Amino acid sequence: VAVSSTSKRFKKESTPPMSKSTIKPKSGPNNSSSPAVKSTPNAKAPKKSPGGSGRKRTPKIEPGSLPPPKNWEDIWDLVYELRQDRSAPVDTDGGHALPQHDRGERVYRFQVLVALMLSSQTKDAVVGTTMRSLQEYGLDVETIHGTSAEDLNALINKVGFHNNKTKYLKQTCDILLAKYNGDIPPTAAEMMDLPGVGPKMAYIVESIVYEKTTGIGVDTHMHRMFNVLKWVNSKTPEKTREQLEGWLPRDKWPTVNVLWVGIGQETQQQKEKIIKKAIASSRPADALGLIRRLGVDLVREGKRYGLEEEIQAALLGEKRGGVEQ
Picture (cartoon, rainbow, N blue to C red):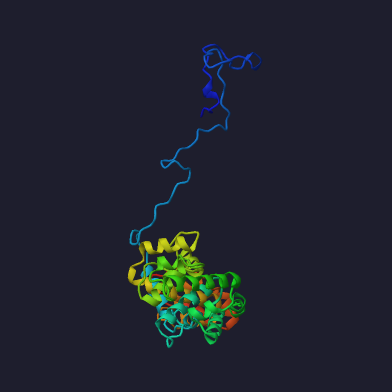
């Protein structure tokens, strides 16, 4: 039983325990006749940590320090095959697809940054519509810097959290003109210092415009799917990023975002198409098993789109590869 700090001020008697009525309060620091006081059941000794604080920090996972999950390459290759047509929303309205190439490299880089800043909590199709409106208006640092917040807000009012994004864009233009001669920062780390720019955006922008990848941009689709596949065990996209970087080979880092965001969009928004692609793939049973794991209800969607027989035939066929069903 732990002894409370209060009980430590008293000394135990060698005489039998006295009744409560005979216990007298301690009169002074030298009084040795005070009786023992039992500690309460809930009394606990305070815990000490090596660093002096009560919170224990989890060590950072370094790239390449984790063992890869079983059969990950088999699943990766299957997703790569299903994504060969590049027909998901991210392929036409993602940050790599929207910027204008004919206005010079500096404007192109700025537009990539803007596309990613607009993408938070917003579907790619809405980002695409908004970006094209901005491009028609004039999407470069100087023009946006000279545009009033009210007018800019009206131009981007279809994206999520447009009030905040208006503020972030205006502040970012101020910083780019003051510190970077109207260009964007040269590293992901510096981009993260811009208002409203987090790791996901910064790593994707860096990969697109500078063709170097120092980190993986992880969105909610990837966070959900990688936990479903047991590739990670995490509560947040940022923790998913850290764990994924812990084992995924670096040569996969530049493509992981667009590849998996696309399959995530198709399994949630384009179910008929992804089922047909799975049936037509080189490994239909495995492909159907995979998209089922990622959230596609094959029974319900098969009835909806008249694909029940094709699905059943594919699932009964010989399974090749190692995709867990």
